[in-house]
Amino acid sequence: MNKKIVFILLMVSLLGVKANAANNNPATVDYVQKYVASQIANIPAGPTGPAGATGSAGPAGATGATGPAGPAGTVLDFADFFALMPPDNAATVAPGADVSFPQDGPVNASGTITRLGFSSFNLTNIGTYQVMFQVSVSEAGQLLLTLNGADLAYTVVGRATGTSQIVGIALVQTTSVNSILTVRNPAGNATALTITPLAGGTRPVSAHLVITQLQ
Image 1 (cartoon, rainbow, N blue to C red):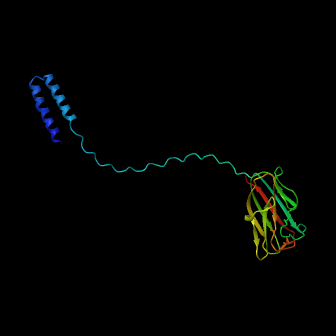
Image 2: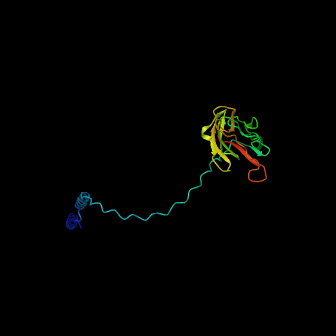
Image 3: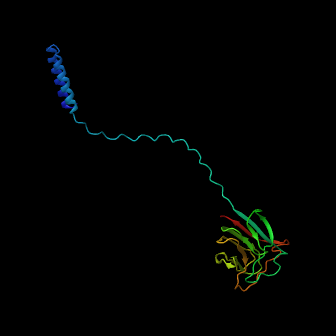
C-alpha cells in the first residue's frame, strides 16, 4: 500500500481518538474528514496498466438483402439475309463486285435494317452494328464489308488454301442515316470468286449476312 495513504490512515486513527476524548467534538471530526479528503485528492494517479489481450472476434453478421437486378440487355434491331447455292450467285463475283444475299431470314418486322437489292442493305439509323457474314467459295480469296461504297479495311477476311468458308465478323459504326452496307470481293484482287454450289454434299448450301444493331 502507498506509504502516504498508510500515514493518512494512522493520522485518522489518532485524530479519531482525540475526537472521542474531546467528547466527539464535531468540529474536530469535520476537520479530519476534510483533511483526509484533501490528501486523497492530491494522490497522483498510478501508471497506466498494460493493454489487455484482444478479445475473440464476434460472430459474422447476417447476410444483407440481395440488390435489385440490373436492366436486361437489349438488341435494338436485327436482320438475317441469305443466299442458297444453287440457284443464287450463279455467276462468279468479280473483284470489286458484291456477293448477293437475295433471300430474307428472320428479321425484326418493325425494324429499320432493310434491303435495297440483292446485294445492298440499308442501315437506317445512326448507331453501332455487329455484322457477321459467311460464304463458301471455291478459290483462294478475300471478302470485306463496304459502307456507303467505301471499303472497311479492318473487316477484310480471306482464305489462302483449302475449302473452308470465308467467315467475317466486325462492329460497324454509322455516322449518317440510311448508310448502305455490302459484302464485296475487294477491287484489285486477281481472282473472281465462285460461290460454291452444293459444297460438301447434295443439298444447296447457304451464305448469310446477319446484321444486329447494338446501340
